[in-house]
Length: 118
Image 1 (tube, rainbow, N blue to C red):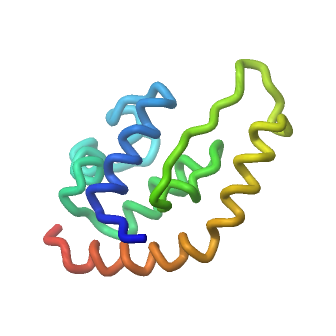
Image 2 (cartoon, helix red, strand yellow; image 1 turned 45 degrees about the horizontal axis):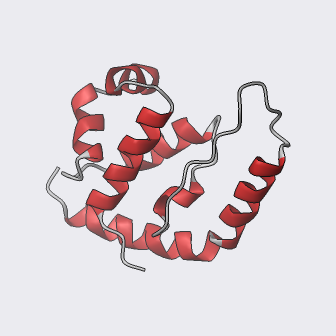
């Protein structure tokens, strides 16, 4: 598995749009400038702190560990569906299985972000 900063940015962009959020809404909620979100989503570089901050922001309500995997899906239940639905259980199980792989990719992401001009 070889994931790039551009891949992560694209996935973050897709995830944000699926949630119906604008970059401005995310940036205001996180207390950062909108251009930081834009640069990260375009894969143009940023800091590991911003990446972790945005993952933390999204993970307050959604499972986001899968975002660092090669295969990326957003599993959304129907309106009013409980958090213990079968879809969520399947998604959580799949995320759990990717734990070691994600940790290895996080190391790679840190290397990419460390070498990117900010």
